[in-house]
Length: 263
Ligand SMILES: C[S@@+](CC[C@H](N)C(=O)[O-])C[C@H]1O[C@@H](n2cnc3c(N)ncnc32)[C@H](O)[C@@H]1O
Image 1: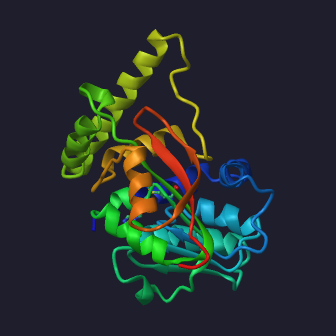
Image 2: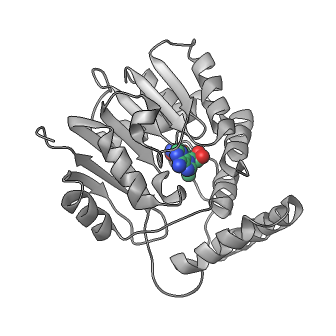
């Protein structure tokens, strides 16, 4: 493991973590779920990354909360936030892979399974979907976000970025740094030429540079069109789609599914 994500999340916590960003994270979860809080819901955060969303969910009332990430450095980040929250007993954090048998994680099925931007980076996205779905209680919710697949040519196509990410992830750190600055400069110039601010405003409490680094090195990586995700979840996993927030660009599509009570 190259700890790409873990290193990125550590730099995020070191430099950017703040109460305002927690608020943004909280609003992103509650806004999409259309709820005021998460009181009364048990929750699993699969691929918890920096732990920001687990922290925001815990503050919003999710209990018990289970945070899982494959990368040990990401787990350390989430544990930092757990300490920040006063080491609550009903927030559990562990290292583990959603590609392994979910029973091995020893986490009870929960009311809300949250997998934002994770399943596409496991190396077997559809298996990760199956395992995530197993962890939802009957009647429970599945809030999942995966990269939209965009066909075409150049910077707007998924295929282009698959190649960039594949190559970037194999470069030595110094070359990765050069590629990062080239893309950062290129994007800023394009934005300035369009009379926009050089640095794009970020959603979900994220930071522009951290996001760009995370994006470039996020490998393995899969993309899927929204209708394919819905067909798979409704057809194979027997989940019901409740809500979507879709894009036609290279970004994450968000989905809210519900598991039937008889599953
Ligand atoms: C793009 S980040 C998303 C982090 C967080 N969910 C968020 O919204 O900011 C993807 C995360 O998934 C984790 N991950 C990758 N493969 C995984 C796996 N097989 N099981 C669990 N987590 C995994 C990575 O370590 C990384 O922290």
